[in-house]
Image (tube, rainbow, N blue to C red):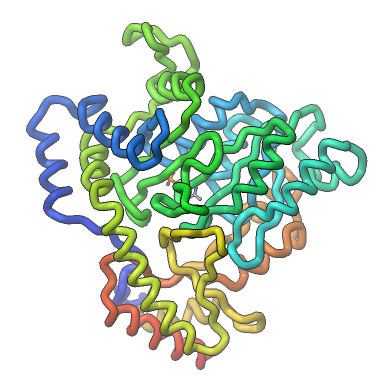
Length: 395
Ligand SMILES: *Cc1c(COP(=O)(O)O)cnc(C)c1O
């Protein structure tokens, strides 16, 4: 049995304010659809300047509602990235739509706008070049390209100006997966508002947490009305409790979670600043370790919002062996990401193969997330980096 980790992989940053807010909800009879979710949503309207904020019970649920709201359905094509957490592609499969993967930028790991332009153009032209973008199996060729779903990985927004240009020219909707990027900014604009609909997530390792939870922002009135209905078992405005205009879901965020989130949101700047400080400590130390690179920020990223700290190893270093050695030293670490197209169910359905998205696969082989949270101390960062040096020697 490996020893208990000396430093946790991640930790929420909570104070008595959060604890009291949750306890206060429990003094009332309103545990769902009360004032707390309204305040939580208001905080996001203020944060983004957008008209609509819709709290849901996970980031995945939020992305799924966006996919439904923009009318993506069976066999439709949506361009997205294979270098992400699986949920960003899974929500397309929920609707029997087909993800069209485009490889990523080797520095940021975000959707490559050049590749996107090429994919959209070639798919639009049809023929062999267009077909090469589509999966080998699991697609009958009848669908239409409908949307782009970029992901702001590790807390850094994708490059939206060229992405929006492609979207506008081809009439595609942009769903921004900002589940790792709350508080980040692209050319001074907030992550979550860089497409047409944006989604945040609040699992305990994210910048703010509600336990489980997510939230959608948009300026689109019609999409917002539909998503509010779908979140609440398909009840449209005017429906009674047992009338359901649409096939909906129970994607509601409860009051305890919303209260927790409301307080966390009021601390957003502090939470992000603390994470930034921990990332800086890592950056300083990683710079001194040969064979290991710290994460790089692109110029348009005017503020990164650190989600995880993913160190990248030089080619030739066996990442998994280093991770194993770290584990024996009591330091947890995680490969980030295992490419989506190579997950077993994706291979089975769409016939993807190793080599299909080489940049994603290369990053996936060389990236290792180190323990990270806003409440880590400098001594803990030191401890992790010393262990890393030792683990690399064993390699
Ligand atoms: C966390 C995350 C989600 C959503 O996660 P939930 O666990 O459903 O809240 C979606 N996409 C990405 C990229 C994520 O990191």
